[in-house]
Amino acid sequence: MAQAVFSFVGGTTGRWQITHMAAVIGAPLEAVSRLDILNVALASLPNGAAWMLRGETDDAQYMHPVERAALAALQPPLDRAEATCAALIPIKKATRWWALTQHERRTIFEEQAHHMEIGMQYLPAVARRLHYCRDLNTPFDFLTWFEYAPEHADAFEVLTSRLRATEEWGYMEREIDIRLTRL
Amino acid sequence: MAQAVFSFVGGTTGRWQITHMAAVIGAPLEAVSRLDILNVALASLPNGAAWMLRGETDDAQYMHPVERAALAALQPPLDRAEATCAALIPIKKATRWWALTQHERRTIFEEQAHHMEIGMQYLPAVARRLHYCRDLNTPFDFLTWFEYAPEHADAFEVLTSRLRATEEWGYMEREIDIRLTRL
Image (cartoon, rainbow over all chains, first blue to last red; front, side, top):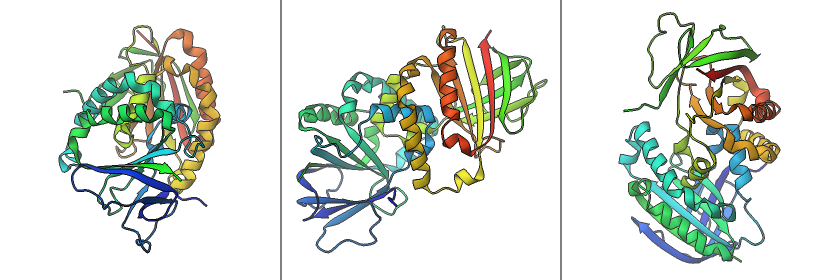
């Protein structure tokens, strides 16, 4: 039975070749050549690996069924044959983000949604999976995995630029941007 | 400063006239003629009111910014002049729902999203706000508030029928359906 936990292993093996790694904010992760993604919770670092990040997917239970279905209708699945490009973006938000009131966070979200609305036309090109790891004793709060076809690489750059220009991103304490191609 | 907490007060005053109330599953709520919605947490039942339901909105923080923006782009705001029809649907899920594993819940969500995809064309007609109340010492887990124009009333019936046909709805222990028109 498939689990909701995923382990991202940076090293010298795996289906994804790393083409670019950058520490956008904060400390870098050790540079590696390949990434393996396992649909299990690895208890320890595999032989020869440099690092491992774990996260679990869980957003659906907080959403209204109608919104869940709307997103499912908008978003393509992972593992499309044409989606040979990917990005893994681990982030950690600063303590002052978690200290905001719910209302303050919502105000920031609403402003951000407003800024991003016009860019939503390229959404169906990018598949996403969001993983939570704040409670998993890892150095990040969220890991987001994106997959897209090479012809949408420019649109993906626009998307990440927009995200980084939002007020929410001002609360990031650490962000790594890892780009990959499928072997 | 606006709060994220809302109190729905059933009684004889308020901006919304109740046109229909039904206990779809479980015990009914006392029948009343009017509903008032206050953007505060009332500590006690106002004079003359029959019941009060409180909830807070909080889903945004569990979503990826891109998904949040996509939903914001899809959904109309509340309080549109033409949206004179509304529904308040408080639900409580059975203990056996919360006892499911995360994977089991996700499997149910995915099946449901698949069934509902084709119905998403009427989404922009219906505005929604989801309120959580599981931790607020109330008899429900979620309160959903919907607003739509009279010409979309048929589409809204299709939406609620689809929701009730999903596997997730098989885990409901209590559901009240309250329909309203704005005075």
